[in-house]
Structure formats: C-alpha cells, structure tokens
Length: 614
Image (cartoon, rainbow, N blue to C red; front, top):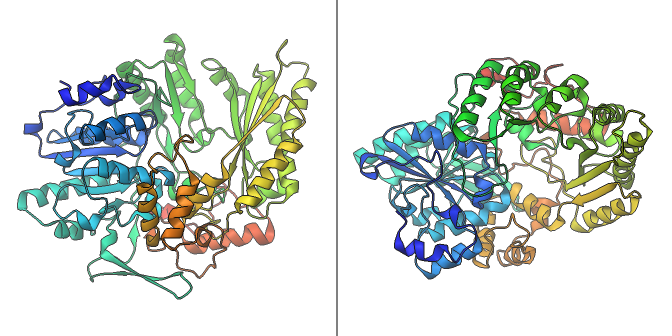
C-alpha cells in the first residue's frame, strides 16, 4: 500500500511509477522477520540506476539471505524532491516505502565523480547528517563502493567505509560482521575498527593525512597499529562460481538500458593508458560460455525482455565469443530476442562475427579509435591501426551496415592540432570508403558519427601524472575539429569542457575537497550528471570559498615521487609499472603488447595465482 502522504503528491510529478516500487521481480519481505536492512542507493535518477548491472547483482545477492532485506533507492528528480521536502517525506526504499533512516546500511555506488553532490543530497533528504563524524550510532552505516572508490578521498568525510574492488564477497563479509555487532551492541567505532581488518575495506576515519608546504600530500598514517597501512582491493577469482541473478527487476517506465544484461568477463587485457577501468578491474577473467548461455536463458524467461546485451570492457576479446554466439543464436533467433554486443574492437571484428550478430541485430556499429593519428594511438597504447579501421568498416558496409560511430578523445598527452585534424580526416576516409565499394547497400547513404570526449587523467592509469588541458585549450580544439569536417555525412558531438574539468578535479582530489563539495551541494548542485541541472559556476565559487585551486588538481603535472591521494590503496597494478608505461608513452611513442601476447609485469595476475615479472 502506498502511504497517503506519498500518494497525494504522485500525480504532481513526472513518471510517478519510478517512485512506488512493486515492479516485476522486486523483492518484498516481512520487515519483522529480517535482521538486517540495507538501502542500495544509486546517486542518480531511476532511469540511470535501474540500468546498472552491479546494482542488479548485489540487490539479488543480498536478498538471497532470508534474514537480510535490500531495497533500491534512487535520487528523485527535482519535481519529486520539491514535493518530498514540502510534505516532509523522507527518502525511502522502493520495496517497503519505509524511510531509510530505519535501515542498518545505506550503500552508495560510485560510478561517476559528478554524482558526489547527489550523495549529500540523498543523505540530507533522508534526514541524516552528511558528515560521518556527526552520525554517532551504529546505524545506519553509510558505505560506498564502485570504480570511483579507487580514490575516495574527496568524499571521505561523508562515508563511514568504502569497499575496494568487486563486492560479491567483501560486502557479504562486512554485513555478517555487522550482524554480530548489532546482536552484541557494539559501538560504531568498534565496528569500523573490526571492519578495517577485512581485506578490501577502507575506513577513512582511521587514517590521518599530513601535507607538505607546497600542498602535496606528505603521508597517510593509520591511527593505531592494527589498522593496515595499505588496503588491497578484492576480486572474484572464479567467475563460473560467483553469484549471478536469475531475474532482474523489470521497471514500469523506460530506462536507459532497457534490456537483460549478461556479464561475460571482467577485466581487460589491452592496457590503453588513459583507461581507468582497464587497470582497476585487472586481471582479465572469462566466464564459461555454457554457464553464460544458462544465465541468458534464465534472464530472458524471468524478465520477458526481447533484447540481451553481452557486457564487458572489450566484448570481442572474450575468448569463447564464437562458442557463446553458437549457443545463443538458435534460441534467440527462434524467440526473436535481439543480441547487443557493445565494446567491439576494430582489430578483431571479423566477417564471421558480423554475420552472426546480424542474424539478431542490424543497426549502427560503434568502434573506439580514440585518436586521429597513428602517432597518438601509439602514445595511448591503443594498438589499433588505420588499415584495421578501414578493413572493419569495409566488412561492415559490405555486410549491409550504413552507419558507423567512432569514439575519440581530445586533450590526450602530447596531442597536437595535427592529431585533431586527423579525427576529421579518418571520418572522411570512412565516408569515401563507403562510396567506393561496389557491394555497398544499394540506395542508401552513409552516416559517420564522431563522438569526442575530453581526456580526464584518472588514478591507477599511466596518465595519472599528466595535466588535463585547460578549458581554453579544449575549446580551441573543439572549434578546430568542427572546422575540419567538410562532409554532411559526418556528424560531431563532444563533451562539455567544464564538466570534464570538474571531473578531473574530483578524480585526482584529496580530503580538502570535502568542504567544496558540501558548499556546492548547499548552493544547489545535486544532479550534475544532467546538463539541465549542471551549473559550473557553483563549483568555481565553491572552490574559491573553500580556499582551493581546481587547477592544482586538474592541470598540474605530477612528479613520479609525489604521494597521491590514492597511493595507500592497492589495486594491484604497481606504481612502478604505471611510471614505466608513462615514460614509454612520452619518450618513445611505443606500444606495449596486450596481456595474451606478453605479460608486462603490472602485478595484477598475482591475484589469481599467476606470475608477473618485475
């Protein structure tokens, strides 16, 4: 039943179905029969959060325990938030519609730095102090995990503990510890201290930070001897045995990725030097094609979806992709279920693969070239060559495709205007190729889309030391790119430079940013991943009021010897490896072979019992 206080406001907001729960496959339990209640909070709108695979996995994993109840919580849109505040309705879980202050855990997933103010807003909307030190009792514990947890320092003052790495095991271990703490009446301090002894758990309040006179970090020091000096991430060693849901919650309203999702592998073997995910999720681990086929059938049957996406960082690098498609194509074709393969690479896209995916899907293809010239592709270790791009497009066009999307980055280390021109030149070559082919689709034109993101230096990458281009430089490059495009067959889109700048500040920031984040939230920032709500001036004003210079974090070249805000966190890719890769990129313009060709000694393979050379 929807509480009357909530029911009276639902007709005054857009998409009210996203605020009421009750969807197919949502989990309802008797609140009197559970010992632990968890609020899984996605700090963005419902349509984004409900598309996230990690949330689906952990939601089902938690709820597989009879005495645990995990509910979903999303950031309300502006109209709903206004009504909630006017009517004193606290942030609530979708399954029970109970305020989340009644829960034991409030869990946030950190997918994007620009969601940090949404976290504060959700805590405030729940009626909780935003600072960890002001939440005194054992409950609720506010925890967070996800890719941005690899540098959690900017929001360390707001979160009680962080999960580093993959969550299926460590999240359960911490919840089991909390179950003991609750039964025995522990204090919050005792629980956090005990939790810090679990591998993959970082409790920021147990570390003191000291700074040098120039503003750089001097050291992270544990407050007592039993607290580990470094915290190592957790990974799942065997994907075949790890928990995977047999059903997903099916939304009433449209979401960004409205389909079933099948995770086929974790990690990446490529080593693109700008790509954080490619390093923090190492090592590469594949899941058996026979188990994946069973997972896919179960999901399609339980959800009714007519599309399934094979997800990974590099889908075409999955060793058993041909076998998996052979397993799935007979029943997906029969049941008219479309199959989506994102993250394809041009260097292993074959005619055979195209024919297989064309049986269930014939839309545009997307490839990440990343840079417009071979020199810059070598600098970033893309290991993709122009003739491979052209051959892949030829295969696609002759197979009936008429649209191609090419992803690039702008502002990469060592980039020149010649590299920017190369983006437009490569797109034009693809257009010319289409019209040169006698076997192209008849009676149709070609469309080549260029999507150009701004480079953001991220922790745990070889480019973590590099400065980001200033906004003036990025704006100049964007204008130049547009001037280089001469064909109406080519469309160009690019990321907002202000957003990329603030993202860089938060990505490489330290604990001193907490004041600026809180100030920015107080000024009105809460859904900054959406253009209609994002106001960069709020951030600039907040940095100034907090006495911080954003350029110190975003636009500064860092020495190899500097202590970074994330150096006390171990994602099992050594800093020496990152330094070596940075030097190879800048001094030699040389590529590094991918992991199946040659081990480069990053260190991550030791997590699964392998060896890496120094």
